[in-house]
Length: 185
Image: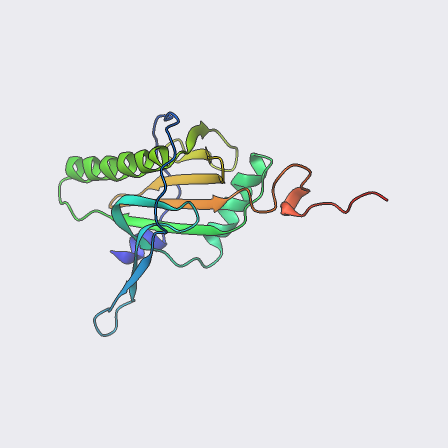
């Protein structure tokens, strides 16, 4: 099951959400669960440390071989932004019935996006050339303190969330790649 998340293609659809009042929340932590002999160790995330948002349902913290970072770099480039820290999360769905898996995926998406709204993020769905798959959805998420890019993608039995800090070095006057140009003398 874990391999489905690691190899997940980028694809998911959703509607834009509204802005809500920011609420102070403690920093989400990750936990590591011991794996049976010969199995990959699974790290569980209760939320996003970068966004300081707790998920409605804990996710697997996914390792990146560079594929996720490359995808996020292309998405950010299409949005004329850049990415700092990148996080990758996955939720697996064990329901045997397709409708039940889809309902579970919707619940994860809705509860996670609501947590971002409750934490004070304004979410805006964006269309980008880097992600032509109609089932993959890109959002920008902005609060007073953070600017993020989110990519949601479903698979048959899992959902993937990629998140990057678009405010890290990507503020006003930042050059492509997030580097601030030197001041003119």
